[in-house]
Amino acid sequence: MVKRLKGAGKVIFAYTEGLCLSAAYRIGCTADKVFARETALIGSIGAIAELPSVDYRVFSLIQENLRKYVLQWRTQEFIAHVASCRAESLGVSKEALARIVRGTEARAFDGERAKDLNLIDEIGTLDTTIAEMKSTLECPDIKVFYREHPHA
Image (cartoon, one colour):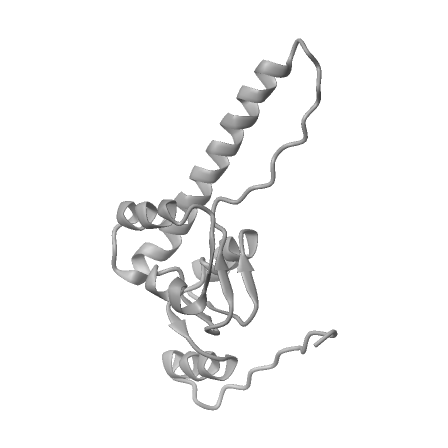
């Protein structure tokens, strides 16, 4: 969906104040600008749940090798996705950013460290994100509607 919106020329902003890990970061990093509170946790790039294991003696070695291959492939694909999404907006090469992301070893970082690693663009609140969005889009009178989390 995000790719379709970007393909239609829409500018996408992402904001997190809590957890933006693994699959959530995979979605969020496709935004043109990523904002986070300094206390948010961002990252966990390459942390992929393992495939279920079936214990058949004949197939166990093949299965183990296949499982390792699939997990390695998925991790590399995830890293390439992040580098591809973030490199252009940061003005760095995909290769350089992929090396940085690979070095995070699937860890999660607070907002400040995530910004240092170029995983996000800015530290801020929802209000700062909305203000930046209004400024970028040159629409100071834009109204933003969002739904409060029902358990907040």
